[in-house]
Each structure stands twice: as structure tokens, then as C-alpha cells.
Amino acid sequence: MTELSKADECFLRAAFQVAIVARDEGNLPFGCVLVDDAGVVVIEQGNLALVPVRDATAHAETVAAGRAARLYGPDELGRFTLYTSAEPCAMCAGAIYWAGIGRVVFGLTERDLKRLTGSHPDNPTMDLPCREVFASGQRSVEVVGPELVDEALQVFEGSWG
Image 1 (cartoon, rainbow, N blue to C red):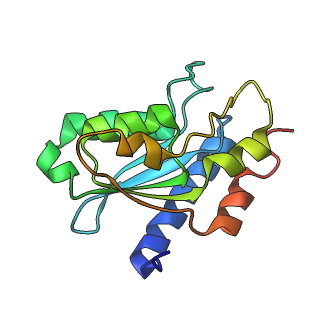
Image 2 (tube, one colour; image 1 turned 30 degrees about the vertical axis):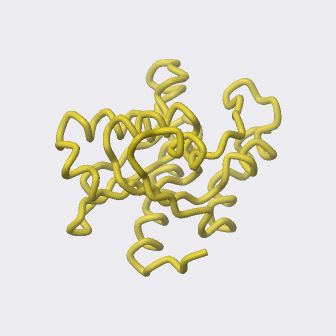
């Protein structure tokens, strides 16, 4: 496993903070930040699946990928990195792929998330690694993770009973 750069660590921790804010606002504890190739955070997005409306598709990464696709072209997004508190689910990985984001760095794996959530109805985790979803596509998406797992676990602790 490649060692994270200091910048990667900083941005991943920023995603954890966005997830904490989402949790504190009544949503599930997921968050992400999208960083351009100059190292500037261009989008911060928390989960919106519960508040303001109950929409199971409003995962942080899916919402962020949609916002990014409306703001930037695929050539730009191919040089951007999405940092996220947990491994993107299959839906989020698809959104990231279709938006054209070139790199993903995540904290907690889907498998570990599934162990935490169990059969909780608010998060029926699929346990499908995002690498498998991306590998099914026609362009590559670099994936780094899991990283800073102990810190990621703290973000999610106690959220599912």
C-alpha cells in the first residue's frame, strides 16, 4: 500500500469533518471533499439521505459527483481527487465514474461499514468494493484506501445503534 502524502491525509480528515457535520445535522455520517489538481477544495458535500428529504440516493459522493459534472469538464475532473469518509458504494462509484473524477481516496471499507451497520434499514450496505465497479468501466479511476481507518471508525461509531 502506498503511503499517503500529508496533503492526502489533510483532505481525508477534511472529509471526516464533513461527515461529522452531516451526522450532527441528522444525516448519516458520510462526507466528502473534491480537490482540484492545484490542491484546492472545490466541493464539500455531506450525506443528504435523511435530511432535508428522505432520499436514499442522496449519498455525499453521488451529490458531489453530480455537482462536479455540472461545474467542470471531464478533462478537468480526470485530474481531481475525491476524498471520502468511506469507500464509495456501487451507486456512488458509478456516479464518480460517469462524472469523470480521476482519483478516489477513502477511509473505511464497504466491508467494515457493513459490519458496523448490520442490517440497519438506513444503510443496507452492498459490500461491493469500488475497485470492482471501476474495473468494469472503460477508463481508469485510481483508488487509494482504506486509509486512516481508526479515525474513520470514530466518525461512524454509534451511528447504527
